Image (cartoon, rainbow, N blue to C red; front, side):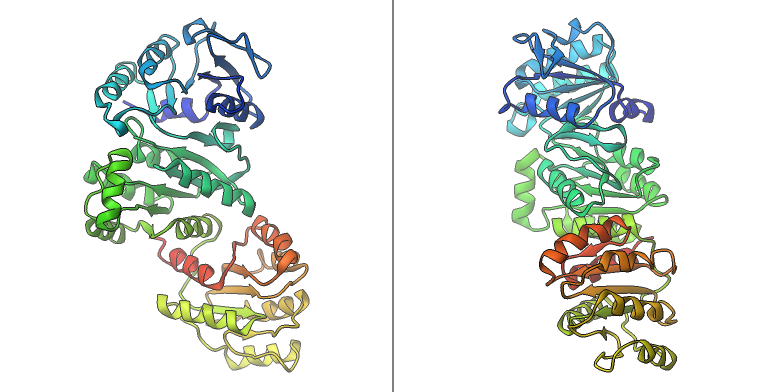
Amino acid sequence: MITREILDSVFRAKSVAVVGASNNPDKTGYQVLSNIIDGGFGGEIYPINPKSEEILGIQCYTELRAVPEDIDLAVIIVPAKFVPDVMRQAAEKHAKGAVIISGGFREIGNVELEQEVMQIANDHNIAVIGPNCQGINYTPNSLCATWPLITGLGSMAIIAQSGTIGATMAGWAKDDRIGFTSVVALGNKSGVGEIELMDYFAEDPDTKVIALNVEGVSDGAKFIETAKRTLSQKPVVVLKPGRTAKGAEAAASHTKSIAGSDKIFDAVCRQIGLIRAEGIVEFYDYAKILGMLKKPAGNRLMIITSSGGSGILAADTADDLGIRIEKPSGDIVDALREVLPNQCVLSNPLDLTGDATAQRYHDALEVAIRAENADAILVIFGDPIENAADMIAQFAGKTDKPILAAFLGGGEVEKLETPKINAYGIPVFPTPERAVRALGALLRKK
């Protein structure tokens, strides 16, 4: 049985052996070993390769059983036919976990070979991630046993059957300067799957939201039971491709997943509170906002913008989602009139017009956060608003109302300010529509 303690030995490993490490920078075995080192992993690292005495400055061993100490985790990057022997050696070294990056198993019809690997794992209670996966990255332990190298602790645990989807999410989180706790590429998920990982990250103190990408669920009843238990502690965003007949066919051929009925899966998500995304952009946006903001007290939104057109797009999207856009009350309008120039449109959206500055946004926000008919505030920077980040950060502790932002049309200023806004704990999106849809996901949080 794969317990939490065993998974701790995977994610919080104190020793890692890379079987198939290489001195060739073009090889995956080089990239993974290099990333474990460069990512700052503080435990023991054992490269395994019979043809090398040293790799990246670390003593290399001919085989896993030659390592003088027991290990916590084996990262396996050798041809599939050699994996069973490596697993036996891992058992000899009392390994608790194995990340099998190697492909060539069930996904290409080698079912018996995969069964042999899993039988060894089951006999010795080794938690297997993979095979045919892109590895794991757990930032609280500075363990990047995957590629590319991405660091930066955040609040999002990404569990992805597709390694590319996981790496893309991690890359966007890096660019946004919000980080993540983990990226786990499930691959064939023959051992550890979404059920064990939802349970694990539900208890992880650094994780505030779980982003789950699966192509199929084999045990529906257990999935629902685990999801309910997880949702009682933190939100879960789900991306399950295969919504159409062609998509389901592609999912089945990718990792031999059981895609199942999408209508049933969608109904389950709605019933128990899983927040479903239809594409990778929504998957990221929803996980981002759920990891950064608390749920608003209601569904009324105040929009503040320097771009009238962008404000209209936000209002349209809000209306589509049932988010209410109410006009500010008379006392709020009077207060705004006192601090804003005459050309501003004192409504909702509140249009500060194209010559707006950070100070004008500040003056508007000081009033808007007092509006009783606004439960959340969307600030749209529709121009190159210098010092936008420092301005909006002043309001993070001033109100219980969640504040989110969109930044567009700002050129180099936008590129500079956007990651700073995220780093201050206020999620910012590249379009008003994406910002409002993300807010819609936040409102669906249990």
